[in-house]
Length: 134
Figure 1 (cartoon, rainbow, N blue to C red):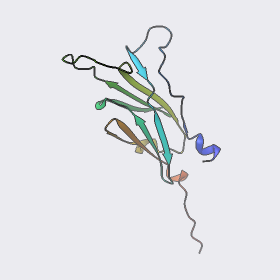
Figure 2 (figure 1 turned 120 degrees about the vertical axis):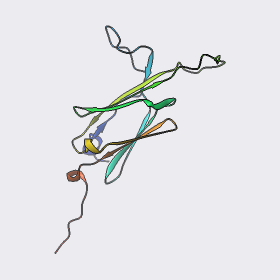
Figure 3 (figure 1 turned 180 degrees about the vertical axis):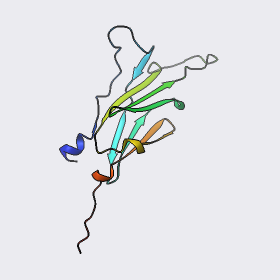
Figure 4 (figure 1 turned 60 degrees about the vertical axis):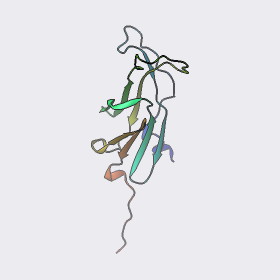
């Protein structure tokens, strides 16, 4: 991947989201979901881990070249008692800066077993092409 290609989708460090100064806009704990990003000639594909998030509680937004993923997890049913917990339940939120080579109108999303797959097609002008010699 060249330096130019790396700038097409910029990724933040993986961590727990810290509350903003002042009054928080969301209650509870929020995590940055882990993500893998792969590329082929036609598109960039982003895989984000969102355990416990359902499509009804998932929002994907593109605004001003920023792709935002936000998902919340329903609390554990009150009928159950936690016997062991390795982390506090919370929501997920992550932002990615999209480059000009991404066709933002054609982004597709799929959520399957807690893994979000986003297909970000490259704009036609950014796709490699062969020139026919006559």
